[in-house]
Length: 300
Image 1: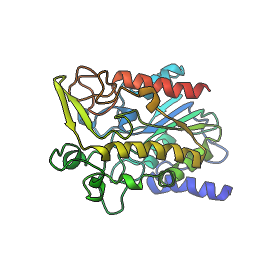
Image 2: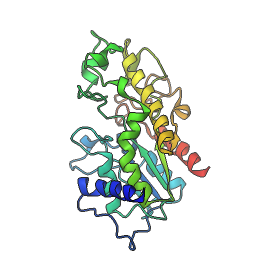
Image 3: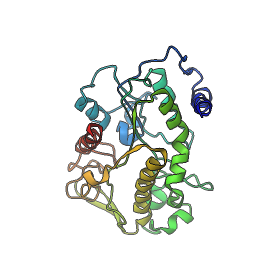
Image 4: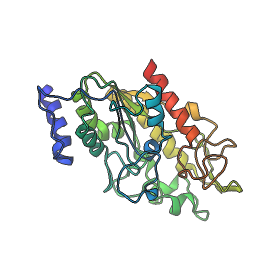
C-alpha cells in the first residue's frame, strides 16, 4: 500500500511539474499551516484585470479572510495557489495537479500542515463527446432566449453535461492529487469546499442583475440549476468516498444568489453587490461568509 501511495505521489510531480521533485525522505519540509487550492471562486481575481499570467488573488477572497481568522495573514504559514480558470483535470489550462505541484515548490506540505482546503470543479468538462463548460455555455444556452437552457441543452451540446457529474467521477478526478497531499501532509485535515448558492435548488429560471437597473432573465434555465445542484452533491459524495471533510457553503449563502434582492454574488456592474466585482462570482460579503463557514469547520 505504501508503495502505491508513493508511486501516485511521484506521478503528480514528475508528470506535471518536473522541477518540483518530491522531497527527500529524511529532509522533508515542515509544511505550511494553511494551504488553499481552487479556481476563480477561490482566487476571485479576474484574469483580464492582470497583464501577466500570474494567478492573482483578491485581498477580500475567502482564503485571505480565512487566513486572517486563523491568525496566519501575511505569514509564510499561509499558501494560496488557487487560480482563476483552473479545473480539476480538463482543458488546456491550469489543473488541480499543477496547483499541487506549485504548492509543493513552496514547501506547503509536511507534518505541520494543518488544513488543506480545495474548491474546484465548476469549470470542468463533464462529457466525453463535448467540450462545453459552464463558461462556454453562457452564449449558446444561458443567454439564448430563443432556444432556452432547459435540461435538453446538455444532450444538444449547448450546455455542460450535468448528467455525468457524480460523486464517483469527481472522486476519481481528484484522487491522485489527494493521495499526494495526504502522503506528504499526513496530519492535515483536507477539506473539499463547496460553492455558494447561485440559484435556489431546482429553480426553473436563472437571471443576473445588470447595472442595478434590472435583470436579464432566462425563464428556461433548469440545465444551469441542475448542474449546480449535481456539482454540490458530487462534491459531498466525493468527500465521503475519499474520507475528506466537506464544507457546504450553500446553506450559509441561501437566499443571496444572483436573483436575490440582497445578492452576495456580483451581477454586471450591479451596485447591490460589488460594482467592479467579477460577474457571477462572490462579492466581498459573499467571500466573508464563505471564510466564516470554512473557519467554523476548522474550529470543530
